Image (cartoon, rainbow, N blue to C red):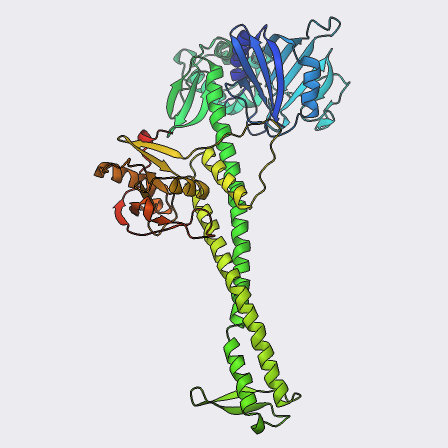
Amino acid sequence: MPQDAFTLRYLCEELNGILKGGKINRVAQPDSDITVFTVYTSSGIKKLILDVNPACPRIGLSESEPPSGQNPSNFCMLLKKHILSATIKGLSLVGFDRVVKIELLPSTEFFDSPEKIIYVELMGRYSNVILTENGKVLGGNRGINFLDNNVRPLIAGLNYRLPPVGDKKEPSDCAIKEIFDSADKITAENLCKFVQGLANSTAQEIADGFNADETLKGAVNIGEKFYGYLNDYIYRTVKRPCVLTDNGEIKDVFVYPYKNMKGVIKEYGFLCDAEDAYFAEKTERKRFGDLRSRLSGIVSAGLKKCKKRHNAVLSRLKDAENAEENRLKGELILSNIYKIKTGETEAELDNYYDGTKIVVALDKKLSPSKNAEAYYKKYNKQKRSLASLTPQKESAEEEVRYLESVESELSLCDSLSDLKAVEEELALSGFIRKPSQRKGTKTETEKPRIYDIYGFNVKVGRNNAENDKITFSAKPWDLWLHAKEHHSSHLVLETGGKKIPDRVLVAAAEICAYYSQGREGGKTEIAYCERKFVKKPKRSPLGFCTYTNFKSLIVQPNVHVELLKQ
């Protein structure tokens, strides 16, 4: 996205207009990369977000604060010490680079306290928040001993120095005239190479606009003309904040609609709001991807471990399969002991159970009775193994089935709340440790998906724990739906004792098909019955149940977003 100096300049103008004169009432650091200032302004309470995550650094306002996952860091405590209750004197862009300066007047309680300045550097992996006093560094979010390629030491007590810009020029620098005077054509590549603070998309927009201007074609002093066009563009563009969406997903945010943009444009009244919408969705997607990846890894590792244990149990069971054969051999040796001589390696004996002959291997070092005893010992050991291994086999198979169902749930998750529901289930099942919460923090209770289908309430579970909850809290006459021969969410259609119209049943079945493994294959068979015919066997895992007296119908998966109530 063009989160460049061009965009930041307009953003800083907005933020300065909103926050100037406001008082910082609270400082929080919900994440190691994110610092949040709660500011009391004349227009109400605002939350200023300073995010130095290398993937998407930003400064802006947000309606909500990210959930806290850590205790206050040393930098957070330093900020509280120096700027709590301070008044924001001004907020501006430094030069024409991706550095924002926040000037602060400390609380009037400390008359001798000098002004503080916070520098927010939004430069990819070098992004940082640095607190200074009288031009000297007090501390930084990335650590006060951080060296930027040994060029700019950020150490407490040393003078603060702005990041190096190399040979690039600010747009207002007259040297740009000479740089572009000999150019045949203005290109985005050269703009990014010689002009400071421009993203590729902004540079392309400027180059395309200048090259398309018919009045400039054949101009002799192209550098002079371009210098004027560039400064007009950067400092006098009419702001029309907007986001670019594709298939309903926000892809980018701009100061005004660029001509080279491809997609659906949605305009906002303020650039702050457009950026907040963009970053909120981007952060949500990142958290969704990270959590899904983590949970998938946990489930895959659990499945691998369970299958390995299952195979080991099967191998031991295979070794114990001939237990009865060993018992028979021991019995036949004892019944024919008078025919067997010590030192023999085998004996052909009559099997009086079926009238056949059986060859029994013998240890020539043992007497016939000791050989029989050895067979009985082996038989007893195998019998004990069978008794202990059978439940182990069933337990391993049950665990594999359960984890496969969780794996299916993960593939069906569409939102962060769905993934958190699966995470909660894994914590309940003991596969992951539930993160400890800070004292006094309230836990938000997630609820199942609820649809309103033509006046009928429908609940859809998002994980096995929720499936059990909605299924076995339903009334006996409510309808229960599940994809036949596929892992799927449990769906409960609350009938209220009324007859269900066909269109309601079909819509409910389509939703059930969507939240099943069968949705990728198109049409899916959905089984349905009254809840009273659904049973949960004792000691069965979460989400497992049996059902009888059912009917089924085949439908095309459909999420029916228009019917979603919650």
